Image (cartoon, rainbow, N blue to C red; front, side, top):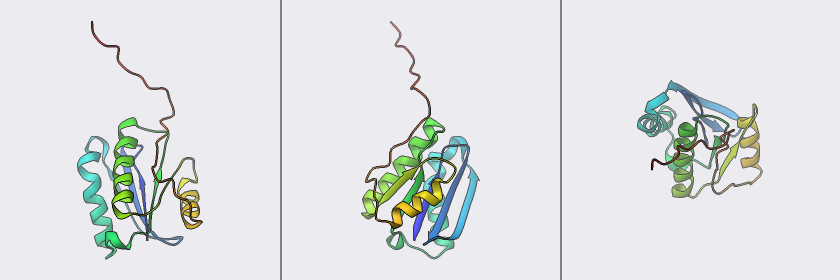
Length: 129
């Protein structure tokens, strides 16, 4: 089983795949509650499919561009799961990110750590003097 995440926009998406077959998907308006809802939604998608974390063989995630906070939260959760479960992780961008990620995972690739692409330079506030 493969868990797929997309957290770059206000509507977050989760998918479960068995090989190339989509088993179930969840989309919800996470917006400012992504950090509070992502883990419970992962639990929900696994429970809907009677899948345990031990059944996961890999994680794929959309790497951007997109919301700084959404990508950061999604990447943190995906990387923690991949590390904790000792399974590979793949991060891809573009319209075909999901198909390309699953294909890369199935060919044995592993990013080890998924890194986001924000699509713009960092905008930091200058310190007050």
